[in-house]
Image (tube, rainbow, N blue to C red):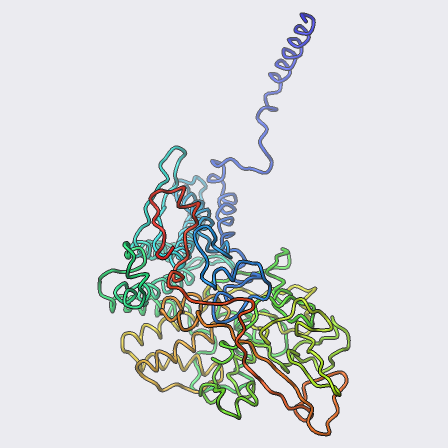
Length: 620
């Protein structure tokens, strides 16, 4: 035993001598980490830190599960993803259903903290490039404002954390009022605007116009029905019974003044960002031009498909850019959303309610009781319909590049068609001979953000389309809405018609509530699948009659005309077939309903348990 102790002592002594002679061994730092002090003494490291905060933006809206499927735009094709929990109103603090990391309560605070760190440390950073310091501070203020705006529009007023906390401090904070949160977002935007004015920004970075656009959006929301508590209480018993209404909106004050602020903020975006994309027209363009204009905007000027206009990129004020040097799921949007007959996944498919809201080319509403329109529901519709929706018989990409020569006509097939004495199912249905598990249920697919370039095979190629967090037309819509609410209808119609002319649609002439309804439908169509409808239906408090509707699909049947012979392979041909279209209510995927608690999301039970001062949202 003594011999062993001597040996151990010798080893320890030898080790001490060796280590004492090589002090640098003890000073070794992890190669994957940087000392926090060094980050603020070195310009590239400081910039890298701020770059990391952008991760909170995720893929923008280019996820497999899209916010559109929490609205009356679409339904998610695949079960057991938690979307039905939200749409059926069974969500609660212990079971949130599907949420996304770009607005999830705890995730936003994980992003707000590094924004606070950057804002604080850049004040005392020791690197010498003052212009870079100002730019990075401006970006951090914008990102903090963006993350707070995400929290506010999903949850209402939340705890305002504008500084870093040290270990041992009390982290329990009360929710700030909705008004205070809006004021903080506006303040951060003001700071970002000041610091970013005159700065040349790389694509995808926050910029002055992005901060102006964010300010415009939050001030528009602040003026809306849901956040005017007297109005909200009159429309919702759940909100009327809530003991802390100041968390949800303004309990008093001049609402017209709020609309005026929204108008001024929107006009500031319009003035700073130029004239937008083709918003200087005095008459409608043709159907073909309207379709190309809209598709070019959706492509952000990136598509190489014939006819696409690269200058449409000017529409994007702040976007999520995808690049070939990174492999991201967002680059597979065509795979995730495209037709199963092309070996794609059909993730979020349009429902009939959206399709019905596309006007006829003459500006009238589509009407199923009109026998001509019922017999040919996809003829003479708003050009944006053809740029956004894939319907039965719609032309699409060359199918033989992925599925063989089974469809030389390259048409979407979502119906059932007579062949001889029987019927066959279309190649893009759930009974497809190509793939039957990824087919849509609704009878539609959407193509808005899928590159139409025929050389891109969606299931094994990548696309690099930009997600538009903010685009110029949203600011124009904000301006129009504020003008309507302020009674400035001539100005509202003038700008609304500029948007319609670009799309190839005739001018509107309504006034009063009819103009408001026309505007709301125009915004719904122009901004489809851009994560606007979820918030618009709530802030306008029209969710009970829109989002709460049962989903409607379309049944399409092609019956051979007397004496006609079915083409082989099948193709859509109105000289051979009589097609019938039958809207069908279907609750098999989701039995949607609207409950007023759904105006706001519940705060996760774990967050409430960690912070005893948190008050849960009404209805939960």
